[in-house]
Image 1 (tube, rainbow, N blue to C red):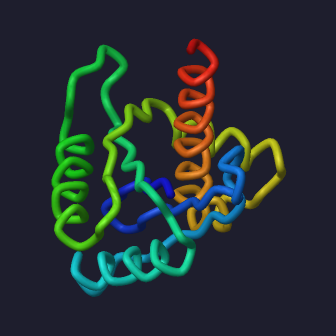
Image 2 (image 1 turned 120 degrees about the vertical axis):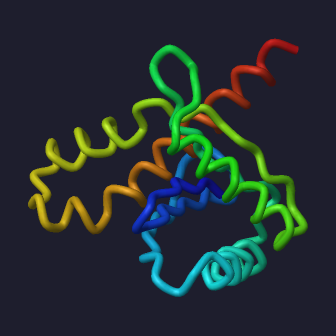
Length: 140
């Protein structure tokens, strides 16, 4: 599972059973506080038989951390208290930009893009993570 943490929304993506591509993407609207978010994510982990959660870190292009990356790190730290699977922090520079580009290319309206971009960004993060794992595995 991948998580794209935003101030107003949390994008989520689950991989297919073979862990080759993001199969399910959704967006949670944040309004009840982080504990409600954690309960929902924990439930998805249990139902989806998730073995790890990848939390995207929106680092600056030069690799430094900003407010968004610090918020994602804090979210990951809180998530570790709620779940029994590894929580991995993953460099996700430009995932939202890529998601936005994909949605524009698919001719999705601006209003609809705002509602789904975080879920699509989580899919971009998950695909990058899965691709990286496959590359590492092929080096052996």
